[in-house]
Length: 333
Figure (cartoon, rainbow, N blue to C red):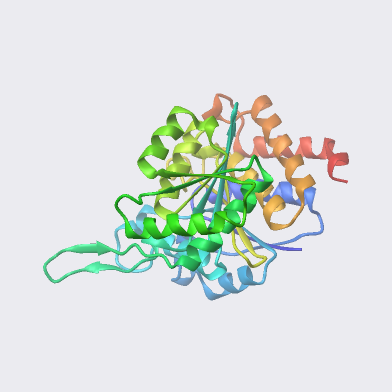
């Protein structure tokens, strides 16, 4: 079992260290390899996604990523740290971003298209100064994501909400048509269409009403952050990026948090829960996923970090998770 770890930048390096400790307990036979990505890779190699990093990821069983970005490069000409992340997603063709949000009575999963739309379309500046970003999707891109979403809904509570802006956008009208076509293959799943503004309002008003939400890249980026805010914030939000190939990319939703980087106080919950998603969706190890989720929940209750009202450092939290995993060893034996 080969897992490539991309710590990235800022607190990415700190939370990745705790992820590695948990993987070592739950999957001791795994071979973990660290590679640079983002600003760290630019500083060392002049490229946010060096060829060696990409080659390692393409040959792995799964990829773990910390966080990518640096204000030092945000407004400069030349390579940008986030470009490496976008290129990696495209190269791995991890077209489905799974963002679970659970807390109290909330249990929803947002499936966001990840390698198309505005973030990957053409962009530029016209001679008169007009700036443009192009939003485009091929029906095949939509169909594979929607089919994956129906399958996930069928494994959950059997309800799928498709979010678009079909009253305005041509791409959304095609999106809605494809959803209806694929729905015929999944008669046991209840389907609902919502405009994105209505979906955002309902998500805030009653998030318990949703099961699986499927939507395009930009809408999914926004709605999944709203859902994260309703269930603890970005600091505890995990994600899985999967496609049809065996290599998935698993990463926390939070950024590099330069204001706290290097202080040892970052909350590693999102990173650890991303490891759990790796076990569940990337390595077909559901028992390990459940054990890690239990350990993280217990550590948050017993030894929370400062952002959740406690005093635990990043390392202390990770050590507590490891201790709980060792006591829970029978669950994954």
